[in-house]
Image: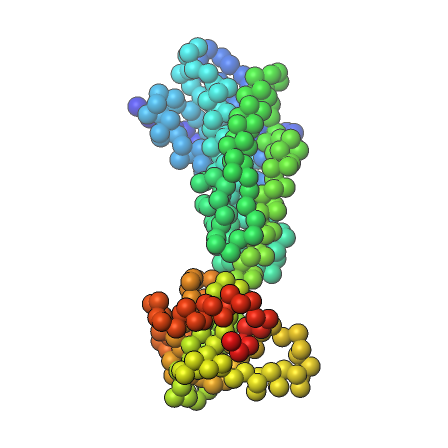
Length: 340
């Protein structure tokens, strides 16, 4: 039989403390823990989580009751575990409950709060997207790079090390008198270095996301210019290998970028990147077809060409000209649009 009780009781006469605490008392087979958190919203989140957890725990033979002062704005939760026998290690049981909550809800909410606090310019949808990316890809699956463009990753055993030390700390604190633990204090002081690494991951993930968003805006702008430029009846070969890129006419002559170079010099843009010059020249000529020769269409300049030219693009499949083009790249010529 599953028993679950949510009972209103009067508010305590003393103020709630920072973090979450557990008041230990045992009468026969009954054990009571008082749970406190700094923010009533966090207490309510924990209350809802414990409610959902009660059913599977009841199937395991562990019944517990939850008593709160106000279900909508709780200042504390009294967790009463009834029917315990001496064979049940309540310390280990509660440690596992807290582990699941901290690595689940608490960590998820912590990442979201850090995003909102440090990056207030992000809209709610972006915060939710980034929070879920960090949590799902790192917290749940261990330390992996969030995306292919990520610049920071946690140590491979970050989650395992954090979980092991957290479990040991919770067991130690709950086993000692007065059987009280402040979760916020525990995490923010004893595990400060883990949270700092998580904060660094959050910061780098936001930076990478902003760079990715800028790249998407850049692609949209290039597409707009290409779509509004009259199409010429020309075919251009583009070779992209690693960080190098070249372009040739249909007759395999060097592609003319002098017009863009002159404009750049006139506008005092001498530091314009050669690949930007080449892309500007391609869009200015607006060829009806671009044949891309590359060893990796998902990297660098080749990726941009694929994104911008879309239906006008034809991927080369090891054509005879590839050897000539690759040989030109291997010569180490100084400019991405210099003649072979």
